[in-house]
Image (cartoon, rainbow, N blue to C red; front, side, top):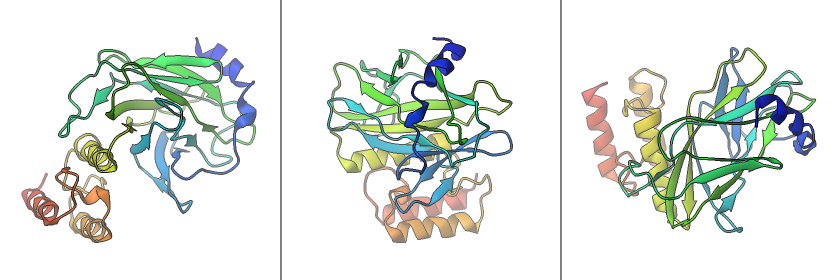
Amino acid sequence: MNRILAASVALLISGTSALAQHAGDILLLNRGSTLVTGQVEQDGALVEGTRVFLTEFGVFPNFTDEPGINSPVGEFVSGTTIGFTIRKALRKWDGSDFDGVPAERISMKLGPLGPISTPTSDVAVTGFSTLVASNGEFHRHYGYTLGAPASDGVYLLELELWCGNAPIANSLPFWVVFGQNADPGDLDAAGAWVQANFVNPCRADFNGDGFLDFTDFDDFVAAFEAGSASADFNGDGFLDFTDFDDFVAAFEGGC
């Protein structure tokens, strides 16, 4: 379906937009005429810059509509369309990396739009677009379905967001990590691996600001002391002093 038709069909479903952010949603912002992703925290706080999101297939077999994508009211001009691109083939976690392309594919759908499925090789697939609400808010919960054989495990989907009719630059790539009857520890470890290897390849730059300094050290220590999965530096699913030692070694080695 082309973008103009998709935007027209979106008029039928734009009334489903909510007026407040939902905890766990992907935050979508317009910063300097560039789309920027973030995270809606459980306490409602809005954190900019997040690019890795964890979710699980839920009550309906092999399906979830989380995380949603949500912007604040007034973030966009009424009439703006927001669409997505699937950037690569689906990947599956093998306990140490996401190198493998599984037999499964994930399809994305919203009402009458779609389904758009992940490719079988690393070629980009352009999805559909929908209108922001009349109040300038964008709030959508795409339906994600894991196709046959839908085996248990952890899957990785790489996406990008774009504006179809406004001079706003695309978002940076972001990743949704899906658990299919997966152990929570495996899901957390896989998310930490994506953060370390895709978002922040200079692993000692813990806060991802492009600079390696003692702010990174302080931020890592705070995450470690809080028991955050982001401090599982070696991605083995356990938070212990091995992670601390590995971070210190990476920090001292520089970038």
